[in-house]
Image 1 (cartoon, helix red, strand yellow):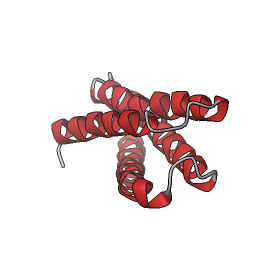
Image 2 (tube, rainbow, N blue to C red):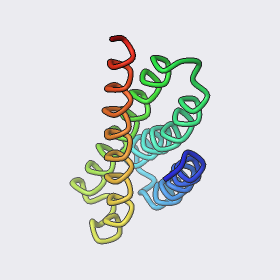
Image 3 (cartoon, rainbow, N blue to C red):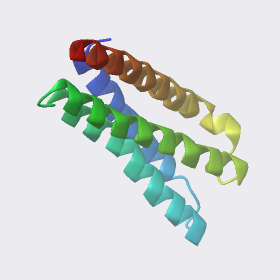
Length: 122
């Protein structure tokens, strides 16, 4: 998957999360979770775009760490949604799968980038 495809995938993911968050209850908990998950989901794509414009390999790795943190945080909020029965798991499973896949992609990219960075120091 090239960077343009991943930019598009993260943008679409953010939009899907936003639409899913609209289905959360209009309670205090629903509002808090909605705000947090929308922020973290859109932050994945925004920070990935920033990583693609990194000034150096070290800068790329640092920005990719942020992307991974935001992807993991988004997964965390999804677990809260399901475990607290704000939205049924059956309605969440596809978006949770996408969240897990994006987290895995960015984790692998970070490992590869860190190894390349270490090799360049030798």
